[in-house]
Length: 181
Image (cartoon, rainbow, N blue to C red; front, side, top):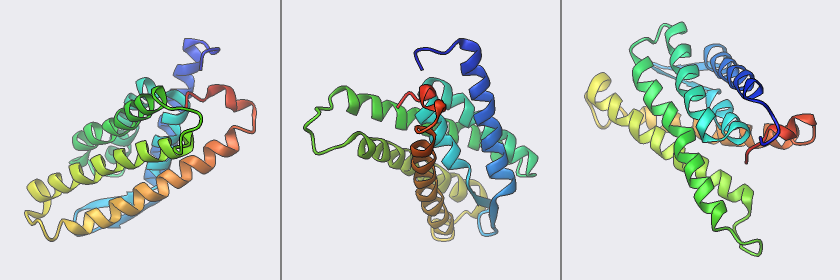
């Protein structure tokens, strides 16, 4: 993103936050046991990371996801989501930056694998953090809260695949100039 202006970065950030809200608000499956949802927002969180990098994607994910919770009537989750989802692009981005810094061209780890590993690490963070919130504030049970873990794993897996597919498609368009990773 070396060539675009600050205004372009802010507009792209707002667009990504809007896409996250839409993906969460309109494409969700309720999980009654945890009073949470499974949604497609993670795909746009990860896409925003690939395009904007962690500096911009972190607030995009935090605000976009928290606003989606509020709009969906899941206000209790908004502060937790702000913190947890905001952590996802930060964790993944810092991992990707560290791995790419030491990456050698002849390495068995290809850049795409490094990106997937970073996003998976962020998914582990999200799954663990939501699990703890579920146990402490929703179900009170370490066993019942495992229902949420299964949904989170599915959600993150779909999100990673979705982001990688969208990124591959967008890199074949003029939008390729907006990619950080």
